[in-house]
Amino acid sequence: MSEAIRIVVIAPDLDLIDPDDAHAREQAERSRSLRIGLLESGFNLVASLPSDVFLTERLAQLRPDLIIVDAESDARDALEHVVMATRDARRPIVMFTNDHDSGNARAAVAAGVTAYIVAGLQSDRIRPILDVAMARFQHEQALRQELADARSELNELSASVKERKVIDRAKALLMERQKLSEPDAYARLRKAAMDKNLKMVEVAQRMLDVADLLG
Image 1 (cartoon, one colour):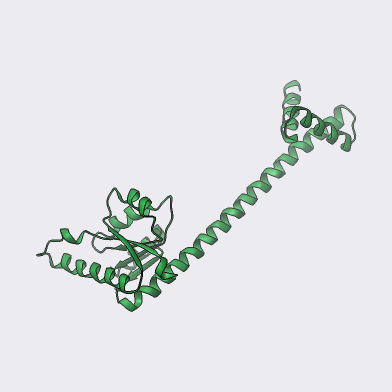
Image 2 (cartoon, helix red, strand yellow):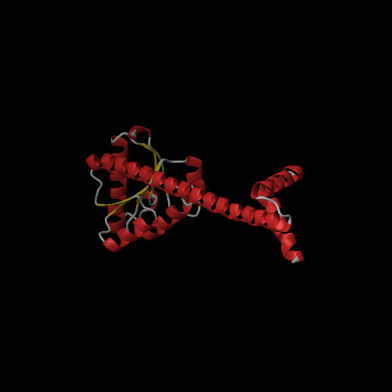
């Protein structure tokens, strides 16, 4: 499964790093190590992109299966760009960083990061980390779909109950004013709906509206 995963890495452009900046050189080395580790592990590294305003369009074109954020000092800015870029097309996001602040880790997970990995660039760790991240993301997506389906069923049930109440009120009105039995009142509503090519609840609601208007 891992070999088929299309990965995009979000990281600073290595060609623009100041060679006199020791911290920038260290981060560049981390980025190179990560990319080498991905290739050595057999993953399909389709692109390395900066976290800029064009990220949404680029991700839409590349359609990666997984996104890796490789950032440190600008981790929050990079993460915000990635989260916004994947808002309408959710994808697993794995963040590699040297930031040991647990508060930042919690904030990243709350923002949508699937896995927050601190100092985890050893080649033999990359494959299991990404495989677990993919599995976790798929599990979470399945749970979200189950929740959405449950909400949809609940909404349908609620709507059905409301419709039944409207029809029952209209039946009671017919039974009272035209001295009909319940089956006859139901049959009268059903025939009116068929004749007018409307739903029974629509006919019932119109009848109630007229009754309210006339008193």
